[in-house]
Image (tube, rainbow, N blue to C red):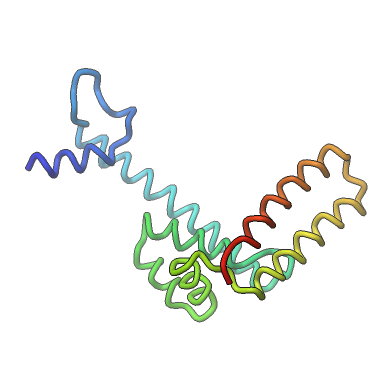
Length: 151
């Protein structure tokens, strides 16, 4: 019984712990768990929505949002995670990522092209130089990460 209580306390919100007590109140643990699951569900739903939009909009990447959705659903609704991993559209990319942290060369090329397009659009719209500098740093960091992943 003590092991189970310790396991529950390990997942409790730190702010729920009372000073001088090593355990959390069970009602706060349940409430905190509900809020966390709900937050993961909202994040997963938003990421999945963006992934679906990425299928039809060429400027929006699909794979990173599908991977994020699978991760979020693994924390909240494992059945949705399994459906996502077994889907024809998102399953192979998620499986590659889980197995090797890999991004297919096709998706790398698409990501690089979209980043160049987004930066070029910002330049064409005469965005202030300070914003362009921040955008350039973020895009370069994202490009380094994407290109450093195995195929």
